[in-house]
Image (cartoon, rainbow, N blue to C red):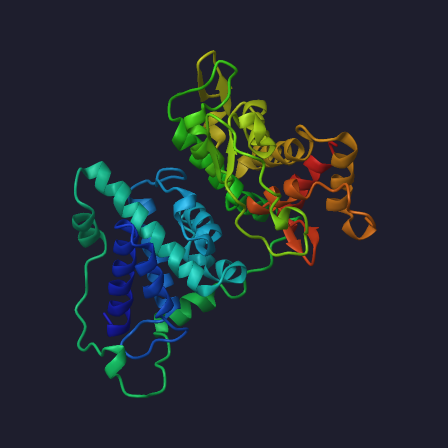
Length: 397
């Protein structure tokens, strides 16, 4: 084994261990210390990413870790890595993470891919440690043993020199995926993959992890006050259930102006989940698509719950129906009918909308947060492979 690969493995171990110990800042510092090329005794960002992706492909296959088996909470992941984490988890469950290096790098910064890979390595080792009733370190040493290197040069003692190019095996792997065609709305496999990789589908997975075999709800069939935070977090909403609602806060700037870049919205303090229409849209969608069923005192998996992971390509129709239903519910639930219609028109034909006064910007921001829309130069853009599903939802309005 080359020293470069050994260093990449050791660095990945360090980052994964930092995540395991809730030392997110340290993990990010280790990532930031990497460069685009290996130098001064450190591996490149790409080398760490490749070791992480190939490890995940191997572990998911050998331990039968299907979509949803590895437990992680999206809000605990650094925001810059969240989208890549969802995508890598979905790809690794099919043994395709490494082969998709190029497409991952097209949609995410190199450091985000490496960081997301390291986070999932940490989460996978933790999952397997729980299954084996073993320690994290013991399982990490078993799956990804630490490596000896012939020399190690501290960064502050290293002489100035030209960076060392990435090792041949890394370059070859990345080049193998370089010809991946851009995803298209006409490609069913691209449409399926794009949906599975969205933050929205990660939210469905997290919801099922929260729900388990069943979970208690209120007498009106809603999340209990103490559960609002966890349920809202599954779709990237920061909320907290409180006994007495505080004074109304001013609307977030990004909820008033689409020209502003997306930013973390402030925590919503509510006495009931009904006060968050975007959350209720998700709750309603899961029921309407028969993924969950509400009983008098609990929520439990519904008749179509087995399809929630969409592991097989033939589940494309069900996946697109789920997305379409959520888009429709997000734009219409507790919304003025005219405003919902104007927002729908703005999504499909943004350049023809002269007056955006009635456009429901917070609803668009929610679709952006879960990866079903992009906001570019103040206008909504549907990623090509998601267009059939998103437009199907819009057209119901």
